[in-house]
Amino acid sequence: MAHVTFYEKPGCGGNAKQQALLAAAGHTLEVRNLLRWPWTPRTLLAFLEPLPVPEWFNRAAPDIKAGRIVPESLNAGNALALLLAHPLLIRRPLMEVGDTRMVGFDTARVHAWIGLGNEAAIAGKPLSLEGCAAATSGCDAASH
Image 1: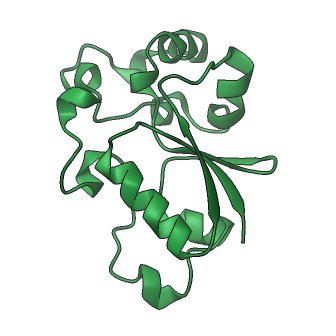
Image 2 (image 1 turned 135 degrees about the vertical axis):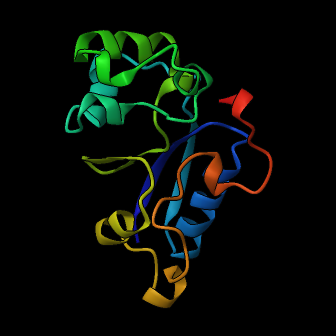
């Protein structure tokens, strides 16, 4: 099983469910606060750079939902500066195993990457366990 460094927003129910799924599959977690981590352009880009810029953003963040920030209109440099200044905008979780990183929590992708147990264990789980849509409580839009 893998040792997963898991960057979360403390108190987010979606992140709690993601962690529970990883732990149930036998992975060990080192949980870090995404909002307080001392990100640098290099450390954050190590996660984000493989993705298109719009996929760097947490779609549940109030400024994005309200249309005040439109990720599709940003270039990589502007987007990175915005995310470093306002980590609440970063799509989560960020996960790292060795030198491999992942942004977001798509169950099929995570299962293919490090495994989530047997197929029966993840059957019926939503494909995406990201954001408040994955949570039943403890994570409201205003806290994003």
